[in-house]
Image 1 (cartoon, helix red, strand yellow):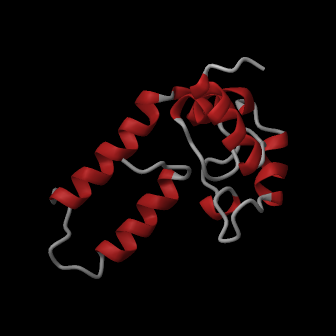
Image 2 (spheres, rainbow, N blue to C red; image 1 turned 60 degrees about the vertical axis):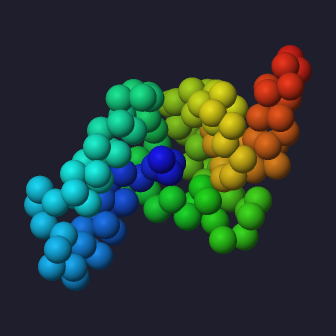
Length: 120
């Protein structure tokens, strides 16, 4: 299952595309899958509901230019769940994007250390 940073934005994007497809209707498998994905997102990690990134474009945290996330880092600075976000990224092995205000390169290093059992 792919990572959701902005479940509302993802749902809106999906529904825009879905609106152009006559087979995609309320109750269809596609819509049900989207609803399940969003519900799972919050069930697995309830802290995400309080994240400063909710409702924002995921490109701030997963930009086209790998490793470049100044806007994402700025948003993270004031986030009330910054520590939980970074912990999640490290535990789940996230290798891409800005997590908890930490650069992609540093997140990758922390993930590697965690999975090798290195304690900082």
